[in-house]
Image 1 (cartoon, rainbow, N blue to C red):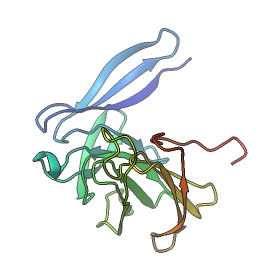
Image 2 (cartoon, rainbow, N blue to C red):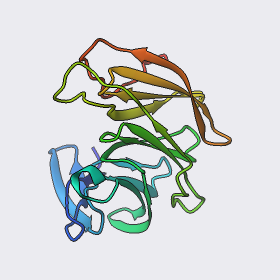
Image 3 (cartoon, helix red, strand yellow):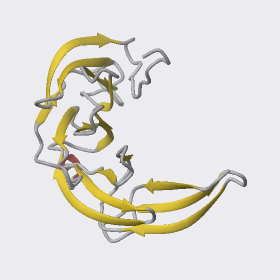
Length: 209
C-alpha cells in the first residue's frame, strides 16, 4: 500500500505547532512527521477541500472563557507545507466542526459553546469571505451538566445540496435547514427532536443517501 499524507490538528497556543503533516505507511501503520505549522490557536478540527489544495481549521476559542471569539482559518497546503490565507470570526464560542456544501463554495462552522451555525463563502483563491449567515439555536435539555443551552456540534449536507442538517447536543435536536447554494442562505425547514438527554453530536448518511 502506498503512503498517504495525513493532516493533524490539536489544541495549541499560537506559538506552538498546532498543525502537522505526517506520512502514513499503510503496510506498517507507522507515522512519519513531515511538516508543521504554528500561528493558529487551537486548530482542533480540520477539513480538506476536495481539490486537495485548501485546508480549513477551526480556532476553538471562546469569549465566555476569556479568550477571543472562535474563528476559522483558511490555508493552502502543498504536501507537507502550510501557508495561511486568512481568518474569519465565527461570531460564537468554541467552534468544533466544519462542513462544505457539495459545490465546495460554502463552509459551515458549528459553534459548540454558543449554539450557533456560521456560513462563509469560499473565494476563488481558497480564502474565506466575510461571514454570510449566523443562525442561533435556542433551548436546553434535561442534563444540566451539559445541556444548559444550545450546543451545535456538527453539520452534514444532503447529496442534492438542498438541505443542511445540524446536530445540537444541548437541545436534543437535529435542525434541518433548506439551503440556497446560489446565495448561501439557510432557512429552517424542520426541527427533529431526539430522545431527551440523548445529546446528538454527529450524523452520517445511509449508503442510499
